[in-house]
Length: 224
Length: 256
Image (cartoon, rainbow over all chains, first blue to last red; front, side, top):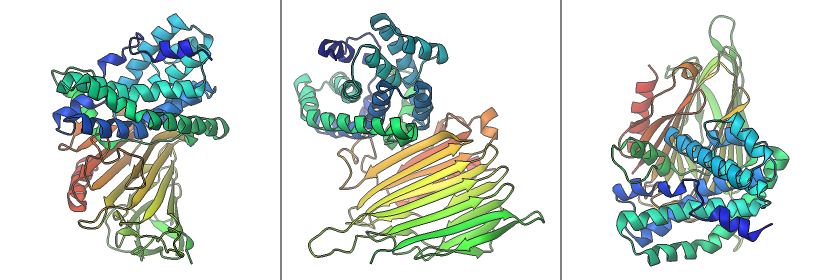
């Protein structure tokens, strides 16, 4: 694997559109559930172990060569919110464009042709990682880091939270991110053996509930 | 001694336009009984005796098959209460399992409306409900998780609901709550301090052509169309009674 390729893929400046999304943080701030660094830590930890773990396992399974269309169907079943399905596909479309420019490959092209409106983003990220010569744990780390860094960055803007405090939240989560990435990889190996149904489906009810309300706001800072 | 028990219910057309129950098998603490008063379509079965089970170490299973053209409503006489395991010396008790399998055939209907699952302090229950639906099957499914008896902290509760329609995945949702769950479960992304968590799932072929419209049902509940022919209500509430009210209102609204 190339460590530099991992940095390129994980960089917040990678042009895949992730910066426009708060990962549910904007809705949580409005509802009064996210008011400072303490709430941010528990918000991020909750995301990490629910939707984060599921998305990381999907990405790792894509790296291991599980059929991307079967994974896309599994991702739909794990995303009951239409607003979040639309977000995942929009981000997937943007990731496809960026990845095909950086690490072009036949698998990314085939997925883009089969899902012209975008596949779920973690699956595209997994194929991009595969195309870049990265491994399943790399893809899982990228997904998990984005799962927590999105809300942390958004909280700085939404709450005028001290950026040092937000980054400290992320740094303290590092061991849990590592452990969750390892778990996602073993989940993905199980999916290679038993199919995508063996992947985790850990979910977060509040993220599903608030995503629909947030999508209907006339004015918002973040797309999701 | 821990209990290993599998109860079974099979519903089939009786040849006279109604539904017969060729299999109605009790086992351990799970006792399905045919009951009369109509609360839903077809034959009605009430699961009695589920009170005070499962205890840690128990392995309980309930298998329900609704054959092509039959209609069945299953409810329960009481809430299911997950209790702590029997300790042997200083060893902590083992977790309990509760596995439900629901199979619904062509033009068959199942209303699966059990009472709440209550997670008591010190308990550790892993529950998995697997549903297999034929293309023209219809389903109403309610699931309510209550974290602790009144004013008590919850035990550990891991639940999963996996639904296949025509052999393809339709819905897969997993929750891990309580002191044994990974961190953040009670934070602003997952359940945010609520103590009652519920889902109401409706599957019907009509949703393929006319999907439900997503809408909020108050501040902490939402109705969403699934990617296949189903609609899901996801709801959080402070307690069991408030949760039931949200799900009942949603059901009355959707099932007309």
